[in-house]
Image 1 (tube, rainbow, N blue to C red):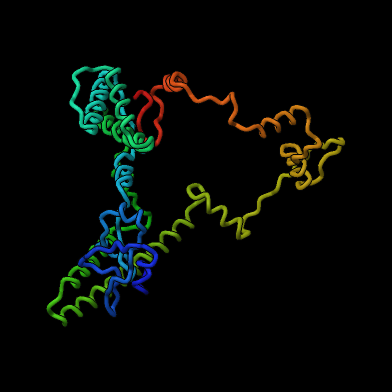
Image 2 (cartoon, rainbow, N blue to C red):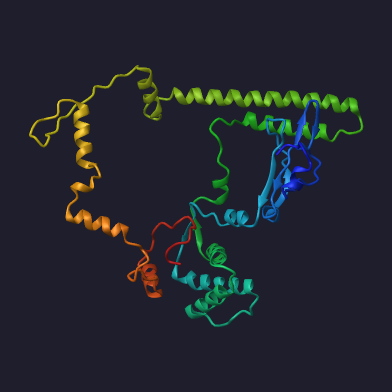
Length: 340
């Protein structure tokens, strides 16, 4: 949001989340100011954390604003296990259960138990579940506890979390990295020059010139990478053939096949063949042509799902599904294996 009328946030019951910082949100050759605002309502203002102006070059007159909303974003980043696999052994399962019990008891503020076994783990989980404010909070808490216990009990295989979050772009080069560091250094040097106005203007000109060169280098590398991508052979770049077909440089012979229609005749062209296939595999939804089976199916779709036959899943049914999970199978997004 840009500054216009300071009375608008008060009228709309909004809050400005900008905090004091040595960097401004907007900076140009004609001056600098905090023209960019982060405006939140009463609900979001309690969830915002760590508002700050990012000290990196943005290739724009507007600087980058970074902040976090609530604690869920940090928890999700910490338990992101995509690509991580755990080596589960019978020896480590006892250690895993002990870690789960200890972690749950620490969260609940209880005294550590000396009794070990499956019953103790189930009792701990049940007590914690009854104290949770809602089912979503209980699930998130259990997910974090299981992830912590898996990390501290089992060996991990696969890529680490650092490799997941730092994916390089194909056109980035070491030269751009050096230029980015130079631009950031000149920017900090210019912003820290307060007493000498002449020196401040000189360093400001150096920073703006370096910033323009850095932006031009990025555009040039992007264009160069795209041209190289378009010139790759068809064996490694399937889009190359599509570009040639769109330009009319390649021509493919159309193979026309025939189908026998209901009257015994054969289709004569590709359009009639496709029309015959559509009528066969995707017929019109005409209720007048329905058979008795179709009428029964339509009647079932109109029946409300809240009937006497609809019953809640029992504990035994859920337990049977969990026990039927195969071992040594790929885990889901949470990374927790089925053995756990």
